[in-house]
Length: 253
Ligand code: 1GP
Image (cartoon, rainbow, N blue to C red; front, side, top):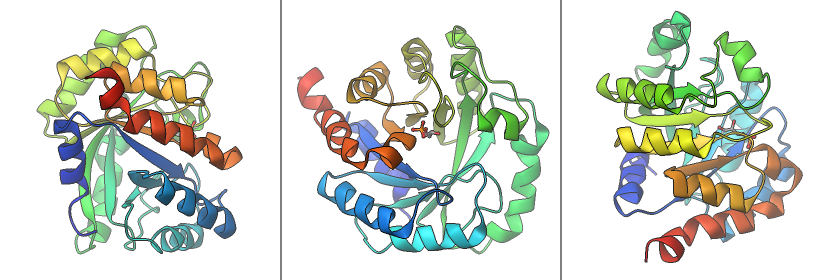
């Protein structure tokens, strides 16, 4: 795929199109299941594979990226839970700054540790402002990042946090409710972040139905990420991809 993942995200956004990313956690995905999921995603025109998880052994990461790269149509983007989750077989890496939190390690510390690893890597690096939003209960990412999520009812706070990230030069924004969260990111949070910023906007965490995905897209997400649901029900990808890809036709014409 070469160095063009971010340009692709921008062009989709400019065209007003919505994209779907499928998150694969290498720790829980078996090779057989990944193969099946890849076929389904290819059939339904999924836009990106995101790869990462809270706790992932390096050999599982490598095997998973390799399995996903057996195809060349859908770019494979690392969405690392830690600096150990870097694999050069992927196309791109979301270099996350947890800007909703106040943990200096996740604002600059880990990035310094990762820099020598990334310096010569053939990976497109996409600086990403990551905002953890309360998903209705404790999440692994809250615990592991040692940060407090933004409250669900403080949309303005989320919007100004995102704007500050944009002013700092980050290229992408990611609103995260936490994998398997009880509730996805509230639409009002997405709407206000969308109004204040111009960067491509990713939203994920706790999305379980196509209608939730659609509401999230309508609120302003450019890329909707789904993980857990597809581990249990890979066939759900069909309806999700369909509502997102038909979005322009159904709601903007
Ligand atoms: C990606 O963490 C999410 O941002 C994925 O969440 O596993 O709940 O879909 P789910």
